Length: 278
Image 1 (tube, rainbow, N blue to C red):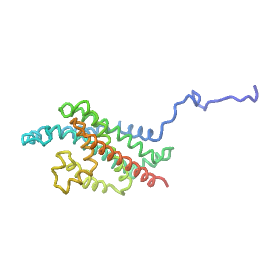
Image 2: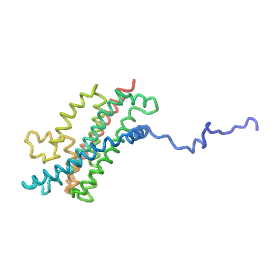
Image 3: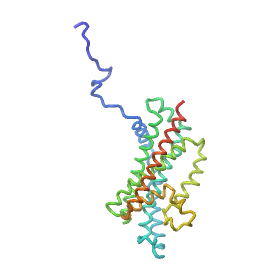
Image 4: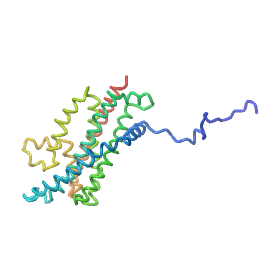
C-alpha cells in the first residue's frame, strides 16, 4: 500500500539490528589487538619469559641449593630449592610485567604512533590502560602457569593451597605493570628505563627476599626491603607454596599490592590522557 511504512535493515545486513551481537568494549578491542600482535611474535618471548627462569631455578636450586642445605638449611625447615622457587615465581612476574610495560608502551607512543591511530576510533585513553593490563594478565597467567608446573615437578609446591600462588604472582605482576606503564608514558626517552632497571628492578630482585630471608640483611636495610612490592609478592607466594601462610601477613601483602595496582592504574590513565588527548 502506498505510504505504508516498512522496516528495513541496513544495506548488506542479513539480520535486524536487534539480532546482531553487541560491539566489543574499548578495553576488549585493545586487548584483542595486542593479543593478535603477540600471536605473531610469541616465540621470541619463550626463552626470556619461561626457559630462563626455569633454568635459573634448576641451576640455583639444585647445584647451589645442595651447598646451602649442607651448610645447615635456612632456619625455616625447608630445602633451598623449595625456599627459592616461590621467590623466583614472584620475581618472574615482576620482570615479565615490567618488560611488557616499558618499551612496548613507549614504542606505541613515540615510534610507531599506535596509540594515536587507536584513538581515531571510539576507543578512549582509559581503554588503552585497561586493555594493556588485560594483556598483562594474559602474559602472566600463561608464563607463570608453566613455572608453577615446574615447581610441582621439583616438589616445591604444597598442594592444593600452592595453586593459589598463581593468582598471587599475577597480582604481584600487576602491581608493577600499572605504575611502570604510567612511568613509560611520562619519560621522554628510553634512558629512563635503564635507571628503572638499575636502581629499582635489579636491587629488588637481589634483596627483597627472593634468594634469602630479609632478616639476614643489615638492620638499616631491612625496612627498605620490607617496603618493596616484590617482598610482598614473595611473602605471599612463598606462604602459599609452602603451606604456612600467615593470614594477617597475607592480608597486608594483598592490600599493599592491590593499592599499587589501583594507584598505578589511575596514574597511567591520567598520563595516557594527558599525552594523547589535546
